[in-house]
Amino acid sequence: MTPAEAVARIVAAIEPLDEAAARAAREHQDRLTKPRGALGSLEDVAVRLAGIAGTCPAPIPHPAAVAVFAADHGVHAQGVTPWPQEVTAQMVANFLAGGAVVNVFASQAGATVTVVDVGVAADLPPTPRLVNRKIAYGTADLSQGPAMTREQAERAIATGAEIAADLVRYGARCLIAGDMGIANTTASAALVSAFTGRDPELVTGRGAGIDDATLRRKIEVVRRGLEANGLPSEQVPAIEVVARVGGFEHAAIAGFILGAAAARVPVILDGVIAGAGALVAAGIAPRAIDYCLAGHRSAEPGHAATLEHLGLRPLVDLELRLGEGTGAVLAHPLVCAAARVMHEVATFDSAGVSEKE
Image 1 (tube, helix red, strand yellow):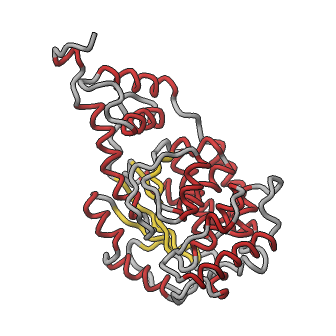
Image 2: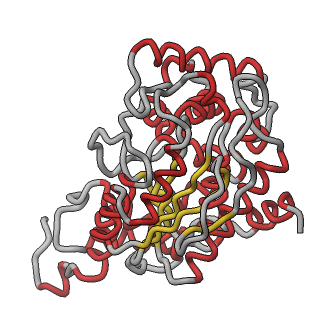
Image 3: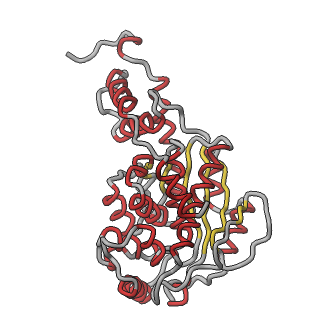
């Protein structure tokens, strides 16, 4: 099966949310011993989970599994970040040693962390929890032309879907997309601008903490990359968009979301990199976004634009801008709490509590 055929097969397997289960969840929420709507957006999460699972109440989405997709970017050569490219491989080693922030947050949440090499510009030694699916040693420079071929983009998408299916097979009941790649916020800004139509200046942020001069350069690099690749354009399909200005991790995250949706498992999105991947997924299969929850809103300006475009409401806003899946992991207990309420909170009838007149 070719990567293109694999992607088409995954998309065909994605079904709409179960409206009957979602409706039953909303009705059950209204019978619980609390004022109607008192749990705010957590009530919407519980309803969404029921629609995803096709049953009310939905099973508690635990345990969670984090997949950190790692890749390098040719646009790094344009001086968009002071961090050297080898930091990507070094941080992969840190993830595998359990020393990164996402490892600590995942331990707190009882989640596993799997690292997937889809394009690190180095050969990584075989290690447990490292999945080698390297497509190339980094992308090409998006400011000069396409970052990758369409076939490479399709391979990355198919890889992400495969990882999602594997993690669900191993027992995950909630998936979290993480990322690692020096200069990946530059590619993210290009994707956000391409899909939302927003000007690069409005969606390009400081990433790992760049100064004003580097930010100005980064904005111009994003603008140049879009122009070099004929974007934005409604005539260019989503897979071609990510091939032109995205990263291997963006394409893999898009596939991860598609794979989760095909398996009817919720995905908690992290920040701007995962959000950019979700834009790709939405362009390929719009209903896949119904299986997504926005874990948080990043401090990166492109993330707010992404969430607005996707119609997703973030669960928390802590001004995070780390990536790795950290914000999504922090949100996971809230998602579980929303589901647990449906199982354990008494109804007015069962508790003998009078409702308001």
